[in-house]
Amino acid sequence: MKFVAFERAKKGTGASRRLRITGRTPGIVYGGASQPQQIEIDHNALWHAIKKEAFHATVLDMEMDGKVSQVLLRDLQMHPFKQLILHIDFQRVDASTKLHMKVPLHFSGDENSPAVKTENCIANHVITEIEIACLPADLPEFIAVDLSGLRKGTSLHLNDVVLPKGVTVVTHGKNNPVLVSVVAIGGGEPTAETAATPAAGAAAPATAAVPAAAAGKAPAAKAPAAAKAPAAAKAPAAKAPAKK
Image 1 (tube, rainbow, N blue to C red):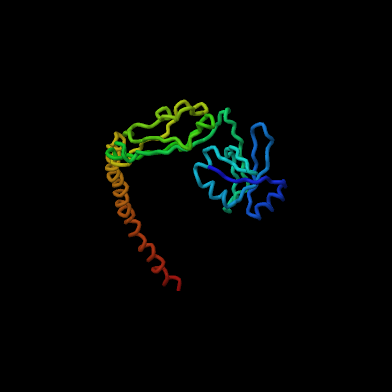
Image 2: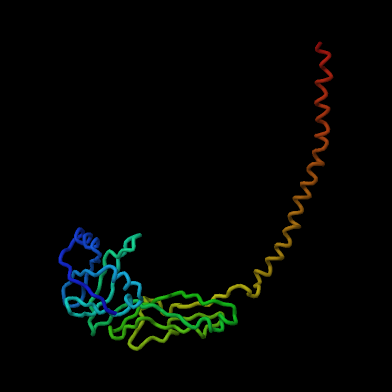
């Protein structure tokens, strides 16, 4: 993939702000034997380029002043809420030096696997990109992963993937991480715990009936007290003539 860059003469925050107003994005190219170089790129062309997967995971051809050099995208700074690229970093590529890059995984074939077709499961993508080390000439745009052999109760690990020639994986201490796990979606057979749950629910109404019965007896116990209330109310009425 190729893009065009221009040499940037002015540096600093103010110069970069004025550059963005004119529709250009400031950037830098570093690495190799040369000194870091300040560049600027047309923002609209760059905005469409970053939407392509190849721009992030392959060796790019940068044309500047009629010369073409190979670089890799290393950093991209975006505006918090505007569709605006604030700054971009590239690294020069040496054909004899190994690169460390993150490349995406392209999954395919899960709809044809026994787990999805006949065993009522789905394929959960745990990892969608991996870090690799290779020479620039061997850098793949992506790594294809075939999921057509997935079955219920299994998972796909990193060691199950066939890597392109000259590519090794950088795992950072994780020996064989899981890439895809198979998850059942309903309709499973009840376990011992789920089978015991209805029995516990059936006992709940019988337990709830005891407070209800006790609540039914409460009004009967209070009935005599309620019957005495009118007699107490008539006592003052009987003494009223004596005060006259």
